[in-house]
Image (cartoon, rainbow, N blue to C red; front, top):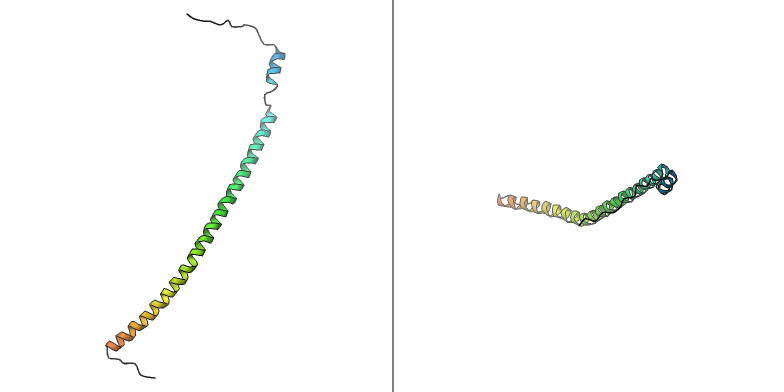
Length: 103
């Protein structure tokens, strides 16, 4: 069985059409909404850029705080390497029979 609904063939009057369209947004309303969206997007972009810069600053500080003691240790290593080099030179001189003079 096929159920068919009856279709009304009445026409819409201009007043009814105007009343139906009245709640719809106008071009001015759409322009305002568009501007609000642009403003919101700009604010979001600014907040995102600030958050990224804050994260960069925190990472640089953390890296600096980590690097400072490492640099001190490396400088000490350079000092130890220098002293070891002097000791090796003195041992090589002794092995060649060059005894240091006693002062």
